Amino acid sequence: MSYTEVIKEWDSHDQQLWSQQKAPRKRALVCGAGGFIGGHMVERLLSENYAVVAVDIKPIKEWYQHSN
Image (cartoon, rainbow, N blue to C red; front, side, top):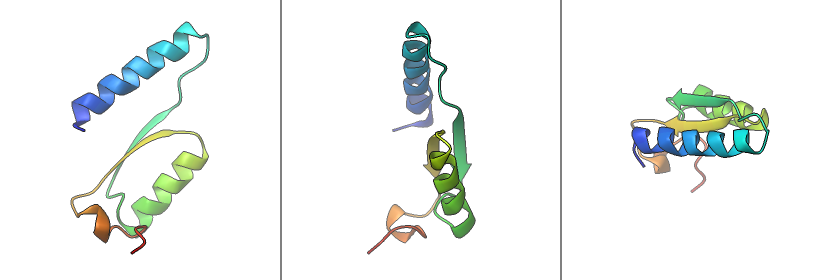
């Protein structure tokens, strides 16, 4: 999914929440999410109910959190 598609999906989701009188979730983009610090940042943001997009240049199989 491209960055533009992600933003469109978020906007669509936010519009649905506003129509239901609920506030949309906060959003975060974590660059370097496959590393030690980025991986922990993603976990923390998810635990705080953020909508998170995690990106890294390395393949997901090489991410710090990936279990083989």
